[in-house]
Image (cartoon, rainbow, N blue to C red; front, side, top):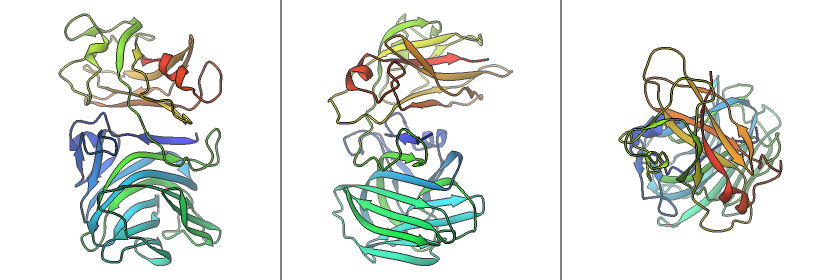
Length: 338
């Protein structure tokens, strides 16, 4: 499992689109307000948050994101919940100019760190949380420096056994902090290949730029299939229609990376799809590298648009970490799965 979620927030067009991936309450979204000019979301106060459900329960997580701290009273930055409720969290606010770690929802304080960020700068924040009533862990790193290291502590505020979701924003008293988020990841450190914090990372969004074949769908206009799905933000104005026949697919050549990064942790394939008739219909993401295909998990479609996505942490051609050359040459797409 390793990287269980990653999001650069570049494909969403509206606030409501965040609901394809998260449970949302009161957040604002900008298509150009991100760390490098792409998308980002803002939580602006009390009851402003998004929650990401985990694909399976885990008792230990790393979470990282670029955060711009703006203003506001103390409230949650990251919170970790189980089926029993909120277990532990890290908070921040200009009223105290400090980070604080709590067991439960503003329950027992486990530690603090004085922190006064620049209100116009992005900081890279990573948190390591392990759920336990006696051997819990809570680490906080800012811009590559460890600022809190709590070990052997009780992080089980609600008494759950495993985490089932991560919350970003504030659900409790006061006004809560005003913060922006971008380049988010959630990682399971107990599963290879990525088992430790990633450090400052950028999620770059690459769009289709050619038809790679097969391209079995029908474009809503024109003859170039890739042109129906290469918007900066997704739109239902252009689309491709596939029949509900097993193996039908759309495969695309993709734009190249802007630079050669030191490490490529994963490739995420992301599509937006719906079904237009009764009966079951599913799609699966796929990536092809040097002729070697890897399929992701099949996702059932509904009659409203939603994400079909898969995270591929190794190159299917080499079973090793991706290189920039391999990413630039890869083909990505979606396939009907019945």
